[in-house]
Each structure stands twice: as C-alpha cells, then as structure tokens.
Length: 446
Image (tube, helix red, strand yellow):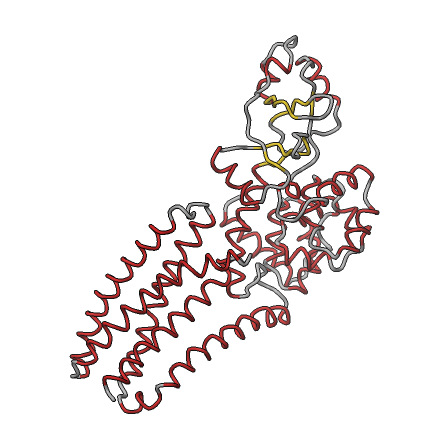
C-alpha cells in the first residue's frame, strides 16, 4: 500500500470516528492489513485509540500489536491482563511474541508465560533466556530440521504433514543426531531435486551463521554484507538454536537509526503521546540543555567588563561559537558513523584525526578572514580582524578534537556516542569559542 493511500485511510477513519460510525470503522478494519490498522491507531489521540481498539477483530489483535511502535504498544498492553496478552499473541511467531512482551515488568512476563500454551511457552522462554539486543533474543526458535540421510521424498512428505510452516521460511536446516548444524537445503532445491536424492548430497555446506551471543549490530552487518534472507543461530558448540530472517533485521535497523535521534531530544515515536509523558521526557533534556547553557554563560560573565567597554563583541561572539558548533557536529557525525559501521579502528584513527584537524584549521582560517574583513569594515576596527582569526581558528581546531575524542570516550564508558555526543561537543565549542574570543579581546582592548 502506498503512503498516500495509508494517509487517506487514517484520515477517513478519523472522519468516521468523529461521526461515531463505529460499525463502519469495524468493517474498514476487517479489510485492512495489520500494518494499516496499526498506522490508524498511531494516528489517533489516546482516548480515540481506546475506542478504535475495541473495533479491531480479536483474531488480528496480536498482529496489530506486533506492528505498533513500542510506546503505543505499551499503551494497549497496560490495560490487558496476562491471560489476554497470551491469548492475542497465541498465533504469532515466538520472536514476535518476545518483541511484544519483553518490555513488560518481569512479574507480568512470568504471568504471561504461565497463561501461554506449552508450545509457545517453551519457544518464548528459550528466546527470553538470552540477553536483550543479541541474536538469541532476536531469533525464532521454530525451525524445520532434517537429517543428512533423509531423501527429498521424505523431506517433502514431512513438510506436507506439518500443520504450519514457520513464517518466511526459505530453507530447511540439516543437523546430525546431536542437533549440530551441518548445512542447509533451500526450498528451491527441495522442489526441483529428484525424490531419491539425499539431503547430504544437495545441502549447502558453506554458509553464514550467527552465534546466539552476537549483538544486533553484528546481525545487521552480516545480513547487509552478504545479502541474506535468513541465517541460522547456533551456540558455541554449533548446536542449532533458531533462525533470524530479513524482516527481523529490517526492524532492528529501523530502531537503530531512529532511536538516537529521538533520545537526543527526548522525543517519543508516539506522535500522540500523552501530555504528562511528553512533558516529563522533554523536560529532562531541556534541563540538561539549561545546565550546558549556564556553563557557557558563566564564561561570558568572566568578561563582562570587556563586553561593556567594547559593545560590538556581543554581536560577534555568538558567530564564533556557532561556527565551532557546526564544525564539531560535522566531525561528530563522521566519527559516530565510522564507529557504528566498524570503519574507524585504532589503526586508522590517527589518519582521521589528522585530516579533521587540517580541514578544521584551513576552514577556520578561511572563514575567519572573511568574517574578520566584514567585522573590521563594519565596526571600523582592525584589531577585531586579528581577534576573530585567532579565536575562530582555535575554536574549529577544538571542534575537530572534541568531535573525535568525545565519541571515543563515550563508547569507552559504554554510552551511546550518538545520544550524548551532540550536547557535549557544542558545549565544548561554546566554552572554547567564548573564552578565546573574549579572552584575547580583553587583552587587546585593556
């Protein structure tokens, strides 16, 4: 479905909701995909969501929950008891159930597991036994396995008698009696091979696999580099535990890209987040920004007498700080991206640092000359020309140093550089910019 039709559906539902045509909306939901229903729910205010949820068919509630963002999903889960959660997720894949319930309190998760069928409980518990953010937590433990000695005829018969095949299955896995992974057999080979041929003669022996302890980033990189549709997950002994499919990886990449931008500003995925929650999350970041602003202002306060004596310094000092902030953000973006992709390592760090320092120096020198000429002509003062050249060049060099060193320090301390880096580097360039500009000016105009 195109984005345009998705928007028009949401608009139509909101229109019918204001007219209280609930049965019409129920009929619309019955003809919509779970993704489109989720979009309609996310496009509604909290009060309207409660009304719309009552109109969703019980048989698709689990699929709709799986399509919702974490915040909106939690909104609905908070009003369900453990039995209801177990019932609406009954028909989902194990990894999808884990995705839905893993954010719940531990006690609630235990209650949901108790309310599940024995089959789901076994599969979901297996996934939950692995740490969050690992391949073990991402995987679907429901896999189809065959023995090397099985013929194609036996494998076809086995697939036919199964009640249901795992979602997005593109291959079966070949294991020995100890469940050690030996290879895989694509469905295309199973369909085209002779009935008498054996799995061990047709299976692919060289393949990409994941350890259950691999991080989500490692999973994403493996799929991206090798254009995989699915990959098996094993333990350290090579025992097959489950599989990860491309749809799991897409969800992981979307979250990896989206999360830092939201966390930097305290924003939620939920556009219609309740007022109190929005107030709390954004207020924390505004408070952090206030502290950094006070630090920069305290530097300005040190040179209050100089500013009162030479008024035009107040006009120029924000430009010096702003140029440093932009340069630092550019370097920070390069560093964070390089670290995330594994491109910046100890062996090439010196080269990156040298290049950024050279770029910052020449950019600082060039643009400070431009600004210095404008300012000296504007205020009829040649001294300001030299002050600007010195302070802006120093600030852009500080921008390069902080843009590289701060992400490295944050990563060393186990913090995400993409989240806290921006606030810190702009604070550094504000302080350095104000201090050098006003400090030199106080000496020149003493």
